[in-house]
Image (cartoon, rainbow, N blue to C red; front, side, top):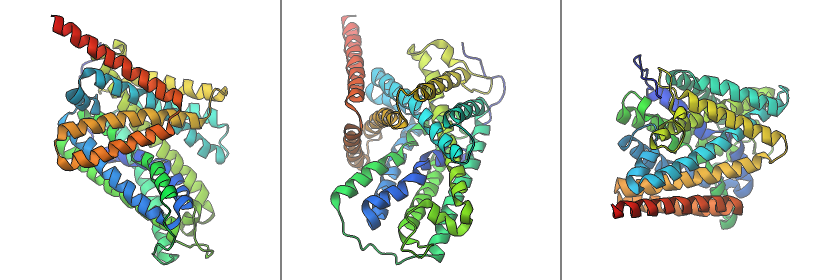
Length: 418
């Protein structure tokens, strides 16, 4: 049974909402992807980044618009319900919950690896500790969580932007693209970069906890996109056009950071990795805990998961998700799978949820531009999911689709009889 709010709630403002968005969408990918993409396509990497920034802008617009129009703890699932009905809403919600339950553990293990490199101990035990710390933070008021995320996101963005700008300013090469264009590796690079746009679909789960749904959400999304795009572009540019060592180029984040931080660059990068991974965990688990708490009303999940504190924190859902994350880490420690499997599973389910959300946006927003670009984005997602999902995962997704289609058909049949 839900506890009623006995005190006036504190709400997220533009800055604290942005704090929840920036760090997670930058994620650990901003530390790993620039060098990977440069190795694949050379100086055409900046073009690949420009494309993915455009994709990110479209994704942010679609999810921002439907989150404002259909607010609530269920987030984008509210729009999916309006567009396609309750069964598709449940399917989309379960995809998101399953993806985050697995992916959040992978995120914390990535942070654990950064700390292990600094000599903090075994990555798995660090992972358990980080899970406990993040869950305890999520038990706090959302405004406090937003402030913590804002601090981590600000530090990460400022350090990455400043370090890259210093390398570009003081050690730049000629700003030109001289490499020959190669379509196949370029297309592969864009596919890899696509995962850098995940995160915008979670913002809707926080719409009940912002000061003004329309103004705060839209301004927070705009501010976040500007910061994220700026960091992406400056880091990508520094990766291919800075030359701090005078040997032809940096081509690594450590090399880019060296002019500003010297030998401490690697420690700085490790610290940023922990900040970005922790903020990713806070955004996603905080978001799906609210989604999970809302599903008990639909009798999809047990009622106890809907329990909240007087500050509207869904503590039961957060606790259960934290236990699931710890169990995922335990099974990995026992050798059941490796982190690449976790990432594959998470990306497949998150991709399916994003696909359903984009299709809902196309149907509800009734914009020709959104329809055209959203269709292209949807086809792109289908290709990515098909290429990067294992057969067993695709089978699970297909079984879930058939199950919910059957339930919808049976439900309509029963209604027509009455």
